[in-house]
Length: 130
Image (cartoon, rainbow, N blue to C red; front, top):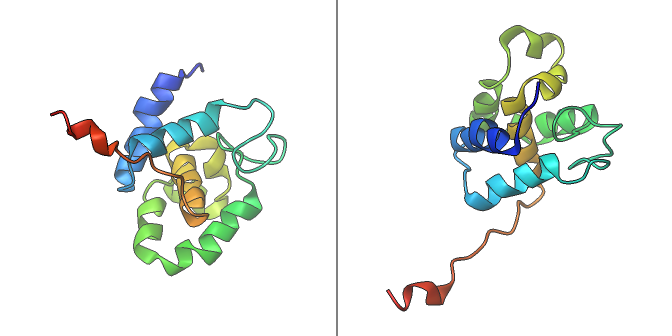
C-alpha cells in the first residue's frame, strides 16, 4: 500500500490530533516530518529498534502507559478509544505497527510528556497593518 505525505497528514495525523484536542499546525508538521524525514533514524529510536510509523520501542510504549497515562485516566481512556478492542489486550505493542491513529497519538503524547515542541508565535507586527 502506498501512502502519500498528504494522505498521512490529512487522514491520520490531523484527525488524530483533533481527536486528542491537541491540533495545531506546528504539531501536525512536527509529526509529519518525524514520520517521513530521516530514513535511517526514527523519532524515538533507530528504525531497527522501534515499532510502527514513529519507531516507538515497546519499552517506551509501556513507560508512557505506566508512568504517564496511568495518572491521567481521562487521557488514557481517550487513547484507549483509538486502539482495537481485542488486539490491544493481547498484544498492545502491535497497535504501534497496525494502527496509525493510535501510533500517532502515542507519538504525540511522548512529545508532550517530554515538553512538547516549540510553537510558532504569531508575529506581533502581522496585525499592525490590518
